[in-house]
Image (cartoon, rainbow, N blue to C red):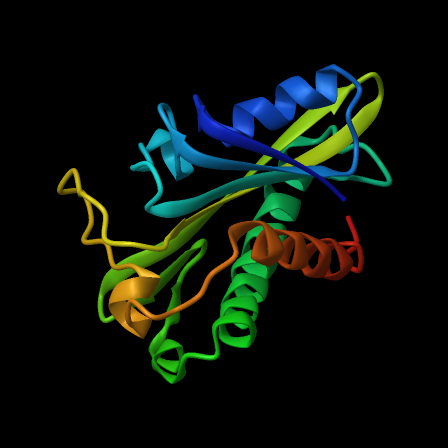
Amino acid sequence: MKAFNYKEIDSSQDEVKRLILSGEREFFILADSQTKGRGTQGRKWISDSGSGLYFSFALGLKENLYSDSDLTEYCTKITKEAVIVLQDALMEYCLCPALEAVYIKPINDLYYDSQKLAGILVEHMVFNEESFLIIGLGLNLKPISSDGSFSPVSLEEICGSGLSFDREAFSRSFALKLASTLNKISI
């Protein structure tokens, strides 16, 4: 799986869409910061430089989703599975016992002690009769600022500053595990 790394980008989700339009397949995006990062329901995702993992990838679907109700139901299933895979991947990758206290706040967030650690965003796109899910992840690696809409927490605050975290290695592993899991879900 090919990786595209950016120092700064408007939105990793939007860049995935642009790359699909240019013909790219089987890839993921990493950014050090986003100027227009977003979460669900159009909320802003604070993407301070070097403080988080800002990641998106496209999953090609075997069939197109044309019905709004089918699309909503399928994206909800995908979001629920994605946050479970993320929780498991963090536990496996970080080997930090404190992460056992991380929990899912339905349907798309990971929380620790009532503070937001990560969020998943799933969007759908059709291009040239191909259907894609675009799955984004915002994960707080270091303490971040807050706009007051939620209380953030970071991996560093949970596991300590000695935690070694390779953003690209984790992202590649997460994307492959997620794709494997999601390919088993029927439309």
